[in-house]
Length: 284
Ligand code: GUN
Image 1 (cartoon, rainbow, N blue to C red):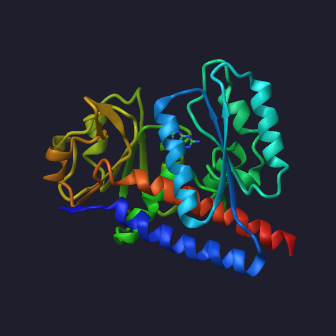
Image 2 (cartoon, helix red, strand yellow):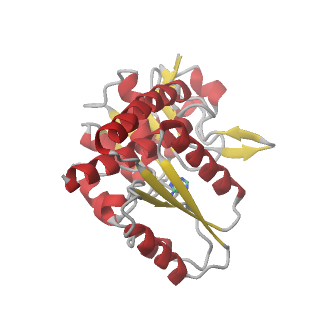
């Protein structure tokens, strides 16, 4: 069994991005810019946004966080999105999820300029992803693909099983695996016998937020297990895969923490740089 070390790989990627942002500044006097909208006081979201801002600073990306109160109205957030859409210094824009109950998230995401949608959550960009066109792919699934690539784990012709069918993780994950030539099962809350699917997986990707959902007996010998889940249990981060029993079956497995999490942030930086580079080319 080998660990898929997302922490180490994200460090290498950040080093490369730092060089690329320096080159963009040197050649085009362009500093990539990212705007983050954070609504309310969800402690996990606050930590994620802080980590994103810190990572931006590390690689030379300018970032700004628009903090809005829990009680904010839909229109106020839309106004802020419009303001950021119109600001040429801000190449990327993301709205940290989840949002408070009174906000219609889907309607908001559609207001983000498609060329600034570095999270890849706009239906336009998700549609491009599903048709195999170049676009901003959502950061967590993109980070999983980068990990697989780095460890030279081939995807084409493999059975991939994605557990979780959210718009921001499961569905785009399935699209990326499909585009890379895998046969893909997507399992979700209504899937009858989950282990019937997971036992077929050469590559098993799990992102549902149910700690220890997948146990070793649900995994095929020699499979690759990618754990996207991060839940706090008694103060410690736990994934959706029960590590001890799963590791005995797997050829590769991601740790939690230190697996997919750091890759998500590295891919956000990468997408932001991509947006800035496209802007520079467009201005020429
Ligand atoms: N909430 C949990 N993950 C994410 C993410 O990747 N992007 C945004 N915007 N919100 C999230």
